[in-house]
Length: 115
Image 1 (spheres, helix red, strand yellow):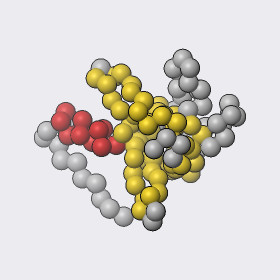
Image 2: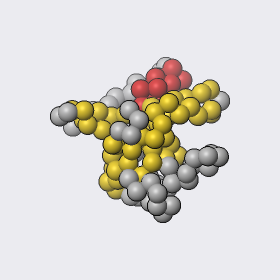
Image 3: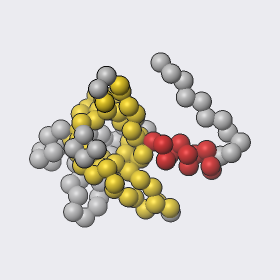
Image 4: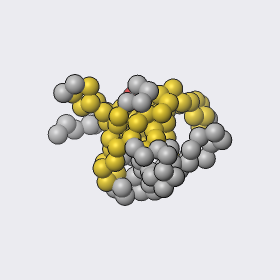
């Protein structure tokens, strides 16, 4: 998954392209949660961003052949972690986020419609 091309459609930045920098990035928020660290297409440009404020909850997807696969959801638009460029984005592993939601909200049904 490292360096896999991904896209997202955000409310602020609309469609952007990036690359998974680290597919095993672990973020500690109470309990650890698997996240994807995503760098923008122009990673060397400090002003380039995969996401900005307002893009939170946007879905990150990629293609495997002809199949579009949803991987994650935008969580943090500005990274403030030593050793990691601030123009990277944190996206929560979607399977893990949905499972955690279901576990934390047993009386709420989550319905995902298809297009």
